[in-house]
Image (tube, rainbow, N blue to C red; front, side, top):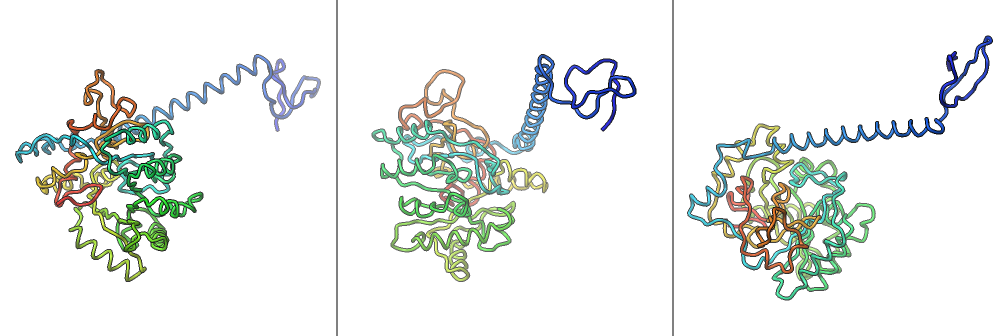
Amino acid sequence: FAVHRPSRPPPFGWALWGTFGGDMAFVGVPLLPRGRDSRASRSASARVRMDAEVTKGQRASKRAASAAARRDLNRSLPQVPSFEQSLQQHGLPTLKTRPNPSTLQINIGLTCNLACRHCHVESSPSRKETMTRSVADQLVRLTREKDSGIEVVDITGGAPEMHREFRHLVRQFRALDIPVIDRCNLSVLFEEGQEDLAPFLADHQVKIVASMPCYTADNVEKQRGDGAFDSSIRALQLLNSLGYGRNGTGLELDLVYNPVGAFLPPPQQKLEEDYKRELKRAFDIEFTNLISITNLPVKRFADDLIRAGKLQDYMQLLVSSFNANTVDKVMCRSMIHVSHDGHIHDCDFNYALDMQVPLSAIGQRGRGYTTVFEIDHWSQLGDRRIATGLHCYGCTAGSGSSCGGSLD
């Protein structure tokens, strides 16, 4: 400690007052301020914290703006023809939704136990976005309406099972006898609090569409992180023990293949044969179907391409592989996509790019965007123009790509 000789006592208390050599002195450290000076100190501290939060927010905003600019395909690749131009060149009409969309896809939230390199919505354990009960109940109400047209509900995320409203939605839609798909990363089955998840899914006959980038450990962990392969194998064995993927049980288990690099998926049927042979041989695992999905240059995968200097080459691959036969089958034509906050999009990729459906698309005036609270029936979202961008080439390249696999 130090000895101080002030000309007058400080405006707040000290640990010890006394005399030293005939002069007033104090020794030690200050106590908390009192009275008006205490309030002033607290106010000053609050301002410092507030300024720090503002600075933190400004930095986050700058990072977000920088990332958005870096990932803007139109800005990065001005020489690439728009998707609309390619449709016109092939004599195809502007993309529109079917009069009665049949799939309701719900992105229930972005919290996830993984942070995969290819994730187009940038899910991770730190993301907190999640659906509220009011949005969930509105989804059920609209689907319960007569002639809603919804034939299947497809729940994604994040890890959808980690979100509070997941089981509520499963129970409600299954009570309506509507099939439900859970897009599962498999490792979530072993998260704390999810011990009963697999039996819950089986009891409600939920179809599982599980991410499995490869049947070898190296490729899976390259995309999803260390330990992901072993947990995926254990999860598949658990699901098989409950009847998933087995003939005659009615419990469907599809696996999803995503390329681990800047290339298109190989033929889906041949790849399925390889998966079934290798997983059965090595681990006695069975599954229903394999789904191959092209990685779209959106967010994390776009960042990977940019860092590797491959964005332009990959976009050229997608554009040159445009397959006109896939256009009529792209998923956005028959899908309604709703994000955790109730906003409506054409697909999960448009959601990732903040391409929302404007109010004008459902015949309402105003410059805002459509949520589930602005509509009374899902059919209001039918027969409307679909928002497109350069990322759409990923769904029409080669054999095509959709949430249900290849298209051609």
